[in-house]
Length: 170
Image 1 (cartoon, rainbow, N blue to C red):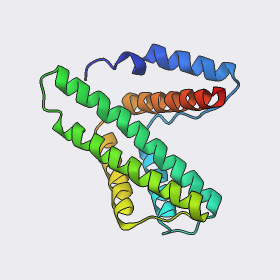
Image 2 (image 1 turned 30 degrees about the horizontal axis):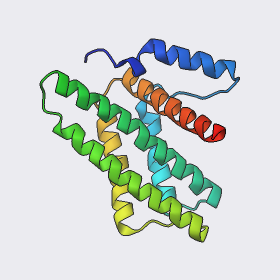
Image 3 (image 1 turned 30 degrees about the vertical axis):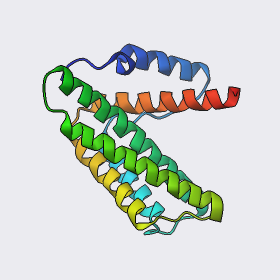
């Protein structure tokens, strides 16, 4: 595997960690995908109503699956660019990115339904897209090194923080 792009470099990650420490904010960054997979599957079951969960639990599950999607977008996007640069066929990663877009649409539909009715509900198409997201995430991350997963998590969280800080200013 070649070098990670600048936004995923170790130096960028260290700078982000330093900024977080300065803000006195603690975020546990996972270093391995295996325990995260368990939480993703639990979040999926909770959001789909397969396990008993409170409204707040379901909101946490939704947030966790949204982060799952964002991290997968970073990973698949990086791999797509790397394969393009190396002259390989990036079609697998393009398909993953399309699935992530479908999952985003499904997640937004679930969130809108919750805002209207006060309850989380998942339609058949949304259900298939979200299940596909978790399955694809599992397949993708099992084939990647731990440092790559960790760097993508960092990048997704940094993006989330930047977006939220922009909303607070506006």
